[in-house]
Length: 219
Image 1 (cartoon, one colour):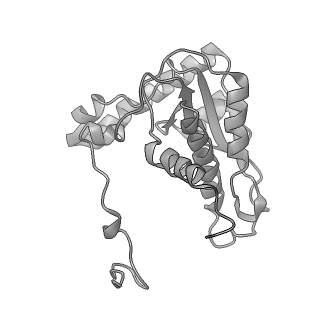
Image 2 (cartoon, rainbow, N blue to C red):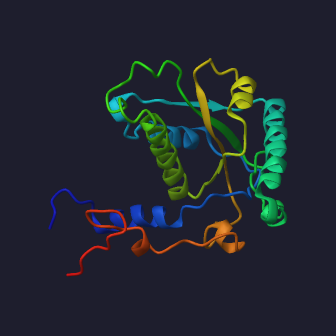
């Protein structure tokens, strides 16, 4: 018995949240409690970060007009993405890719400005600030799922345009638009899998030992 382990039912809850987390695009307009959103943000802020730099910044979009402008820009990018996909354009256009106008809350997640002085863990891998912020988003996502609230990560946007719309300082970088809210039901499987866009590949094809594409030894 590991003295540091959570009780079995709490361990099961962690794994259930991971297993049943979904990138949601369909939302109900029902508001969520401010205290609930605050808990999700606190969970995000407890994420690990390289050099403890804590590069994440969250902008809650409270103005309906700003939300609509963000949505209009995402729609522009959706059409450009369809053009870039060429033979899969029609399949892509049939997908619902966001719920910005439908969900209870919209958050823009960004990397802070003036990140250059933070070299602890970033001297050879400066992208670790993005990795750290992604951990914060995952914490937010899992906390929301555990409380029955849906989250959708929207990445169809031009960072410069979103930075301008949200008054972010030069050097900062928006990395996500999060749609947050009540849902009628969580997808049984990732929506892109349900819609036939792609499928989850087996872990066995992505796990190596000692060198790339060397399968682990059995036993």
